[in-house]
Length: 496
View 1 (cartoon, helix red, strand yellow):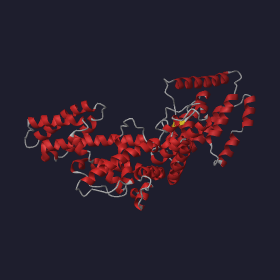
View 2 (cartoon, one colour; view 1 turned 180 degrees about the vertical axis):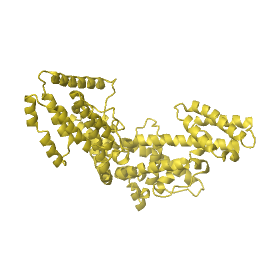
View 3 (cartoon, rainbow, N blue to C red; view 1 turned 90 degrees about the vertical axis):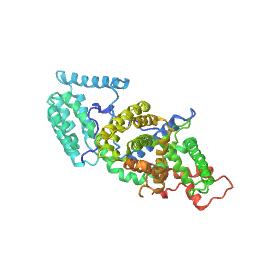
View 4 (spheres, one colour; view 1 turned 180 degrees about the horizontal axis):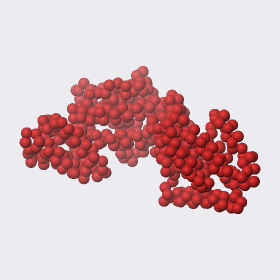
């Protein structure tokens, strides 16, 4: 089998097959809020069917969008109730087997059952020839006769099993398989065989996912759309939060359009378009605060990704703000010195990683002053005036305020990201404002990742957005133009 790129952790798998479970690397896959909001009159079978539908939808979405997705053997925390119960059950199982093998004569009944489970775990349906070979070596009738006569050689059988495991496992498991050959205690040997088998099964699942991903991508849009329709059929209120999300975006876009129409700028436009509303709605997800509004159902599966992009965006805004203020106070000559901007950006990134933004900015001001002082003193012996030092430190410490004029200026990045959405991920990135060019590479990567999420979401959920947008933008009795109708359908032509 090919080498497994997504390595599962070696210290977590269960050593008891019947208790072994697999989980995704991100923990439990998120469940749409419509499940928890189900009315008490819903039957248990309907609720389980709905939850299964949601789980399948989330799993397919994660496999398609997350290139690093893989399963890992699941092990409950040792200090949890589940962890303690699991440990007790495992210990009791293997202690019972140890006691049976220590009897005189030894009782091999459970050991034979374990050998049968090993045989079933090792092979896939396609391993016809190998299964035939194993059936000959692991002839259960012959093994039972050896048990009855006290002549069973567990180490001989285990050696053949280990050799078979070595031929089937991924290269990353070779050290663990080799270590099995050094074990002499039968119980410890069987336990570790199951341990490694659990890892191998996880590797096979992940290898299968990697192999099927290109085919899943081709079918993902229709599959996710159909699954969400099933959820909508069972829970008609599954678009309520999405409707409120789009309605808020439509109101904001209408107000912006009105302001543009009252100004003589060339950006003045006509009626609000469905594309503009959708783009504004997606942009709001990068700085989602809710204000009592629930997250839209159609984007819930991507919330973790969008929240991470939003945090990166805020960090880039703060970083660009510090760079702009520093450049304004120390001058272009110092700012252009070799290595200065790199050290400055590194310090900004490290110091702003904490949760206390206000306190971090105070410390950052001191660090920036030290870097500037060192750079200025090494540049023709000049010094930065004390007034400029105090002003720079004070301006940086005030960046925690959302209405700070510097941050407001820098947040023109919103327009940059919207331009990327309108231009599509395959087109050239729009020109950045001057203060943002120092972080242009990071912003371009962020915009590309954001555009991919938006593009896929619009492709899948466009038919669900269309009637909502028609109702919001085209009241009954108001005629739609052909272009308006196309936009209301949510067609993502401009994102392809």
